[in-house]
Length: 321
Image 1 (cartoon, rainbow, N blue to C red):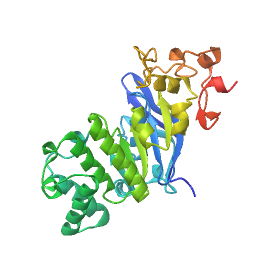
Image 2 (cartoon, rainbow, N blue to C red):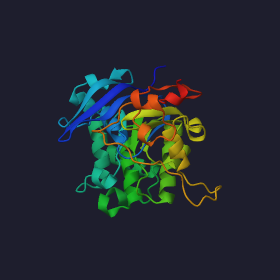
Image 3 (tube, rainbow, N blue to C red):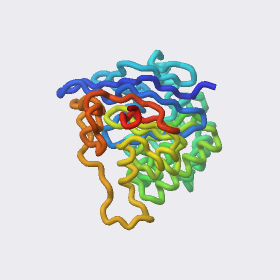
Image 4 (cartoon, helix red, strand yellow):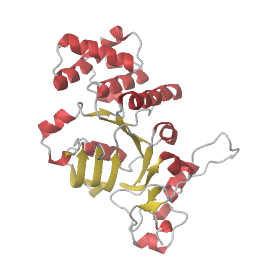
C-alpha cells in the first residue's frame, strides 16, 4: 500500500530584500496511514514552511514552491487548482495552527466556527452540524459543551482554544492532521492532555499525524518516526527510539544532549555552540559544519545527502567515508 503522504524533493523559496531565501531545500519523507511523524528543529529550520507548502498555503508573492512533488492519497497536490485544494483542506487534511488565538476568528462563536466547516465540506444542515459540534467538543475533552459552543475564543483559556482548533481539524474525519507546535505556550499539565488526545485519535480513528515541534519530550511521547531539520534540510530521519537513543548526526546528538535528565547531576547543560545560519547565507558543504564538533575538510566542501546509518538515515560524512 502506498504511503498516505509522500513528499519528494520539495523546494520552497521566498524573495526578500536581502535576496532569495530557500526555506525548504529538497526534503523528502513519507507519512503512512495511522502513523505519527514528527518534524523537529530549531526556529527557522523550515518546519512550518514545509507544512504550509503541503497545504499550498504559501503566499505568492513572496513565497513559491519551486520544485518537488506532494503526493497525498495518490494525487499530486501541486497539480490541483485552488478550488480543489480548498475541498481537501479541512475535509481530507486538518490543520492545527501554532497560535489558536490568531487562528480562530474572534468575532464568531466557537460553535459557528465548527459548524461552518461541516456545512462547507459535508453539506450538513444547521441542527446536524450543531449536534456534531457538540460531539467534537466532548471528544477533545471540553466540559459544559453547550455553554462553550456559544462562547467566543477570547472567553476560553489557551488550552481550551487549542482543543477547539483540534476539534475543527477533526470535524470531517480527515485522513491526516498537521499539528504545528500544538503544545507551545501551554502549561505542562495541559501539554500532557493534548499529547494524550492526539495519541488517542491516532489509535481510535486511524488518523495520521504530522507533528511539528521543537520539544523532544513531546516527540518521545507521541511520534512513531522523527525527521530532524536544519537550515531547510532533513539531516536525520528514522524511528523515534533510534533517533533519541542512538542519534547518528552530530546536530541530533547536540539536541539530545541539551535535554535535562532527572538521572543526571550535571550543573551545566550541554549546548550546541553558535547559531543556525541565516537562510540568505547558508555555508557551503554541510550547513552544520561551522557548529559541528566533529567537522573535517570534506564537510566544508561537499553537502552530504541522506544515507542509511543502522535503522535511521543521516546526512553526515562521518558515516559516508
